[in-house]
Length: 289
Image 1 (spheres, rainbow, N blue to C red):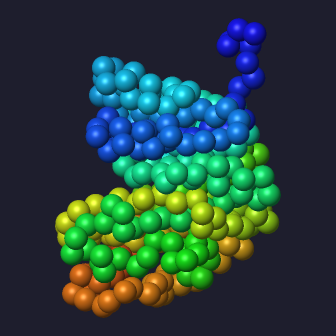
Image 2: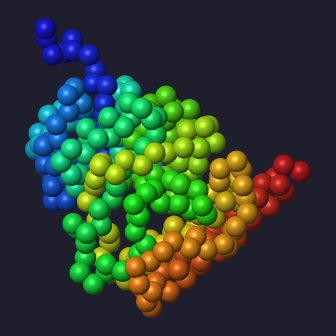
Image 3: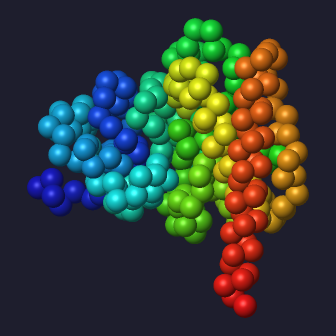
């Protein structure tokens, strides 16, 4: 039978891509070594226009058995790229990871097996394999032997997330209007629909953090803004809106000046986000009068 008549793969891995680099090549090599008892495809959603015509793209795609790229550079957003990548495939099972991390052997098989019984799952993020010396205690564990939580509600990190298409489409994909925290909002929407996420400890991704204090503080400032957006819009499960300034209280290995600065960055971002949400609400009410 001609390959063009073969049924479309039931499983797709979607990666939002900001640029073509050595990290992406390493990730694609790791994906190319995955073993699954059925065909699957890789979709690179190119979120940088420079990547679309890059001559390295074809060589990178050759590192996986069935890889292709789709353009997603009209809006610079990882959420937009993930949504565009999901829309470009008809696969029933969608698995998301990032281009600068590295999936462990058996990762895809573990995710697909878990999704046979649950519609929404998250794997384990290994922060030691790609860890940065001296930064080991800067952050709470991304997956502390379980899924992370925000104000007591579990969520799946988009760097290691699997979902059945039916649920993905019911939720409407990732919220592209959020500054950050789209994986939280996605998870809370799933919980409200009656599908809380399940943790898959055997599906491991080596997680790469940004190096340096300034990038850390900027990243967590933006996290804070996204948290306030979620709270203000009633995005917590069951529409709960309380806790605009309640600390998430995630445990850290060791308290330090960096820990204090990181928490301050989150608080500043949450304040900025709350003020912006209230201003937007006032402007909307004036417009509707």
